Amino acid sequence: AWRWPDVLWAFLVVGPIILVGIRDLTQKDRTLLRIYPVLGHGRFLMEGIRPEIQQYFVESNTDGSPFSREERSLVYQRAKGVRDTLPFGTLRDVYRSGYEWMCHSLAPLDAPHEEPRIRVGGPDCLLPYAASVFNVSAMSFGSLSKNAILALNHGAKQGGFAHNTGEGGLSPYHLKPGGDLIWQIGTGYFGCRDGDGHFSAEAFARRAATPAVKMIEIKLSQGAKPGHGGILPAKKLTHEIAAIRGVPMGRDVVSPPAHSTFATPEGLLHFVAKLRDLSGGKPIGFKLCVGERYQFLAICKAMLTTGIAPDFITVDGAEGGTGAAPVEFSNSVGTPLADGLVFVHNALTGFGLRHRIRIIASGRLASGFDIFRSLALGADMCNSARGMMLALGCIQARACDTNECPVGVATQDPVRSAALDVPLKADRADRYHRETVKSFLHLLGAAGMRSSGEIRPRHVKRRISDHESRHFGEIYAFLEPDVLRDEATVPLAYREAWHMADPSHF
Image (tube, rainbow, N blue to C red; front, side):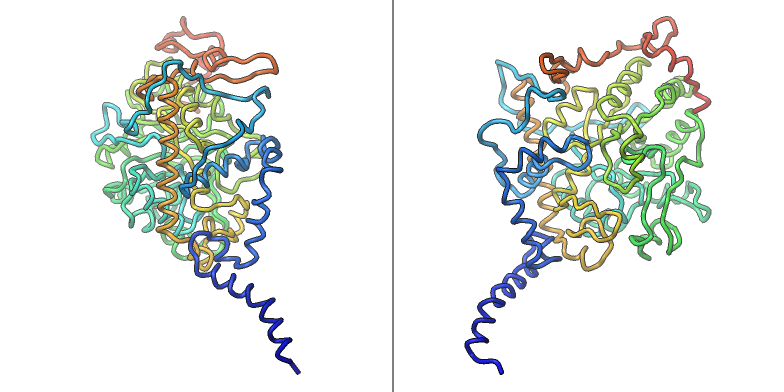
């Protein structure tokens, strides 16, 4: 029989655990603790042992996969409104090959007070859009939970930045908060497909007329798995998602690797013109991870032969991507962001098209310096997926394709998803965006600049060996305008690809 001393001792041991569990279940700040009360504290305990191991994490994570501990801490601190200054100097080895830095001015200026807005829309666009310099990259409802989508769009609404829908279509959770949307059209044409899975002009026109849709992006390829269709595992497919996408239940949703609506560079551009007309003149662009260089040059040649140009091009780096992908594609296919950006910028410049087309950088971007660096390489603005996921509470558990995301971000499990508090996480997405843009503006001031348009390749340097560093203008060859229009002026490095480029054939 139990004696009172035994009961008292049991209460003293178990009681605090029960109280901690109740507190974990009722608090909203940490989704992990709402899903794993008590046990979740083990992770935060390990994170607390930081000064001794942080340098190891920063130096050991160089493969371009998950964010390093330093990058994660930066996003978390900004999203939560925690001071993100760092004592005792940089954590990085400044003499290590690959280290990059910005060149400051000895006549710095106060940081600009207003965020730059980038006008997207060429001469054929009737409804141009003034975009933030930093936006939410493509992540679909299905890959992310409904609460994660709601939080991102609420954050975009509050902060005045754009939210890319990903290829999974326009869901009620993208539309309800009222944030600005970039509607992505992938090879599955989700949200604008007919019963056979082909593009439906009627369905597209109906959805494109939605006021929240500000831009439309055709996805040719993505950094996570270039040359491979998008994947939504069957275990994450709900009846609601199946209805939104127009697909059957019970099996993986795998988008085709290529579009069925066009098969040539000229066909792509006619599709761009068609979408622009069907949408009432909204900005139309396409997204790609650069592969064969001659194929992109063929698109540029097609712009000249057809007289049609996109309003923007999103360049995704092979190191980017938050979606599930085969290992070989993630590790070994596609051009990294820096090389892809420079090439696309050069190709458009060389064909005399750069002035009418905006370039968006997308691929493992999280900080103000990442924005500055991308603009130095030729971009006009940037998108972030992983950074925005971290702002929502992602801990990079890498369980996105299992439907068991421990923080409710990348799951369709109703219990896990409901644990993600939408208003709180929306505020964090908004704050992360605001503080990152603020950091970028401070970097502009440190460089003695008043606007992002003043950034040049020479403003960022990279160490290429233990004893040598060069700025981007010395590392990369930047082309002069119009040199790719005439065979006689094509630089040697572009000559073979230029001759192979055929506007009527990929």
